[in-house]
Image (cartoon, rainbow, N blue to C red):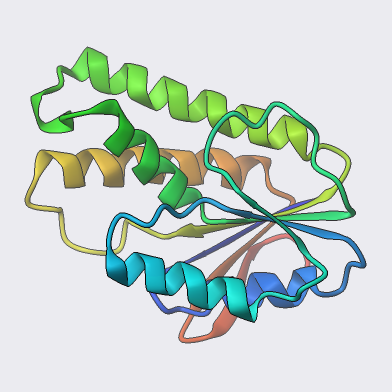
Length: 177
């Protein structure tokens, strides 16, 4: 089963996803964050300390070629995976639409690899809902919002269950309560 947990910043989406994963005896936690600054390094360290010690943690955002172990795979988060791809691509502000499409195709391939590597397991995907705010003032921000939004739509179509987190409360959009 695939579950997609969406929400804004500090909506409770990671905590909710971890609560679902805690029902499984073997969990692989895929952390997609990169420590680009001290604040992010602090957040990553906090997440490491609060995860159950018996969960296998993979810090990875691309090249999902090997199957995951365990009963459940929790990926936190898809929007950081998208962000990492965009930053690795170079100066998005100078890219042509064709180059941006190529970057998005690379992200889609990574998502396909991820889904394939987790086939047969419970897969919990955490992602930010990016379509509820104002339009970003930069080309990079708009590109990120557009690609992340399309990736969320793709995952929501494939997911068996989709939950939107608001103020720590789950709102089931698709699938069972």
